[in-house]
Amino acid sequence: MTRPIDSSQPAQKCSRRDALKSVATGALAVGAMGISSVRSTFADQGKPEPRPWIQIRGIYGGFPDEILKRGQTPADYGINAIWIGSGGLKQNKIEQYHQLGLKVFAEFNSMHFASYLKEHPEAAPIGADGMPSPPPHGWQGVSAFDTGYRRSRMNEFRRVLKTFDIDGIWLDYHHSHASWERAEPVMPDTDFSPTTLKQFQEKTGIKLQDSVTAGAEQLLGPHREEWTQFRCDVFTDWVREYRDILDTVRSKALLGTFHCPWSNEDRDGAIRHKLAIDLPAQAKYLDIFSIMPYHARFGHHHDPAWIARQTKKLAKELSLKGESDEKHQIWPIVQLADWGEPVGIDQIPEVLNAGTTQPSTGVMVFHWSGVSKDWQKVEALGRFYRGIRP
Image (tube, rainbow, N blue to C red; front, side, top):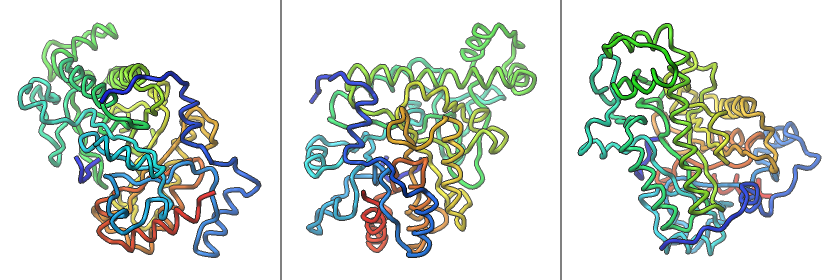
């Protein structure tokens, strides 16, 4: 996700379901009003009816101090949760917003901490030509197969959880070296380091040619499925380790992920073959899936309903209905700030309507620093969020 933001607490044991119930406190079960009646009311009156299945009405991208400076609170805009980049967390600010009744979640950069490569160039992703892969559109990833990088990220993940009293932490950039957050993505084939190729052969028993280029040709050809599964398994194992750390250090916190909005049918299965994301496998360790259907950025500017369609596909893949008592929840992050194509004020209700249609049980807005520059957008956001509160 390209975004403008880049004292230890003892662990308390509780179940993941208890944590989700805590987040959903005050949310009511969906009554007789079905989704179709919500859509009808929205279309006929230009405003939504209460949506009791929506637990979270959030904003992403910083502490919304601009609201406080106006003598107001986030609740005046229907906001009950915020997401902060882990590098911008401050304990006194977390306490301030907790006192205002908000959940405070962190975003954690998993595979895109490019500064690591300054002292460890060997951790750069290797292309099919045996050379370090250039960063597409400047997006420099790091290899998931580098043990030093993995250890470094896990240590930082543990530090964040020990230091800050957060309600949850979301993995971000947890995919292979690529630039996919645009209408026309660039996703080079990578991870062909000698170490990785050795691991693949030991894991699968498949013999590869000695040279990187010849081995890569095999992996992208007759052994594509085995190679895809091998890479996905490694990225999933990172999620397992993140979960283990969270359960040990701050067990009440939720573990979420910001992830690509494509289904397995989109772009020839690129979410797995190119990005190494296996969401059903990762689900064993996750609580919340925050799909990233940035409609304007991804070429769907005139079709905000694409947001709901992609969310529905995700729910089908994960066998979710969008009910508050399910083990996993889907909280999309939707685009209201201008990035690529602009998002007009008049489109905000339609975008948020799509983002809060079941199976979604929460929603957040991308991103605060952009939206807050146009207070009419903040007011439009507030009108919708207030309208859907139970």
